[in-house]
Image (spheres, rainbow, N blue to C red):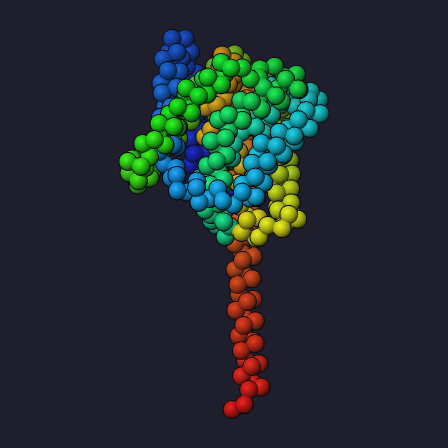
Length: 343
């Protein structure tokens, strides 16, 4: 049952949303809090850049077929499925919440959970590290571009502008590059202080969520959507994840990937990053109420963790059974050989 329970970070997210709903920040305080949030986001992406080893990128980039499959799933398959879900608007999904689903479809993959689940299931961990990291790097450019493309095609408003790209580069990419440049000197220290620096990672996301939901609550977020609307988003998230998991799992087999690579494609290709998505939403949709936009992503985050925990354990159990069968078969063949061999 433990695998179905929400993790600590998810509980903190829920508490943050509740706090923003009851005690939203507004007025001059919201402006100062927004400045602090921007600084925290910049620090978050600086640490991402400083953690990422260049050797990992170079060594993992050699497996180009696997990385191409994951990138096409993340930035190709997901957006197409998101557009298809436009058929649910407005009879099933409100337009604002569908915008959030469409936004999560163009986000990069997660890093930590993709690697963790790949490791548990017995997949290609070095390739997972490279693919998940590359997905986040490409996402700084592709996500705003895809937002502009999909939102203009679907007529949902918003979209790409050079101002948005400039903000992405200044607030997200510039700190990331600075971290990469300093990585040879500070990378090992930062990786060794993971527990100490974790509050920076999670705290910056919680700050963005609190700021976003505060602004949306002031604008009447919870008076706009019903429980049925939230339930519809949960079902849509579950359907989206189930489709991608099936396509990545069986598609990788059809393409002839090994079992280890299949696991990597399944877990890296099906994830969407809350850590990158919330800060990006605050930049791309600046000046808008983004509470409804990040809500589908927050729900998807918990759904993907629960589903992938079960799948990873299934893969691990299957590998254990296969290993046991191999040992038993080897022992049987050895006994037969000893029985027929001359004494």
